[in-house]
Figure 1 (cartoon, rainbow, N blue to C red):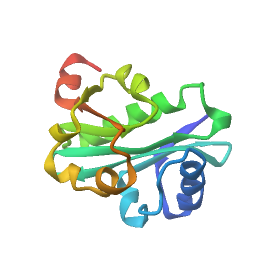
Figure 2: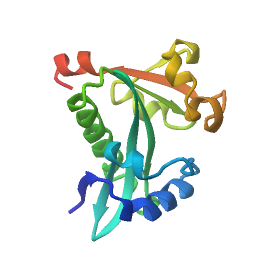
Figure 3: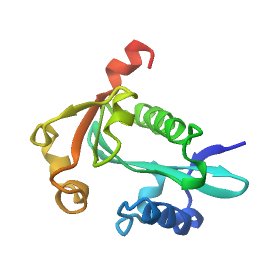
Figure 4: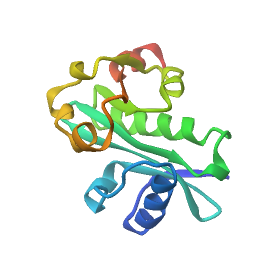
Length: 152
């Protein structure tokens, strides 16, 4: 059985490997990010991760990746649900993300595409927006206050 839990410093090498295998940036992830990072663990091994970066009441969902051996069994969906719950409990009202390949996955989870310039200014100046993600990445948003009301 897989378990989702908060990431620890001991998880950083496995998180880095999963993100590298997925072609996602990880060089900026360190111990200070871990309070807002979750991992999914199966048989004592980290097989997936996701995190948020906070910008006031907005946050950037980032680094969602699942090991290729565990894809297609719902781990990504469970990670998104868990990080959304974590964000709500932390007072986050809106989640934003950038994706080059998973817009359909995120649409299925209540995210909607928006113009990149419509994201909050603080997020647009983040490393993810300004350095790591190409201009062709789709920007998406989910209002967590609406999702809570709708029971999502």
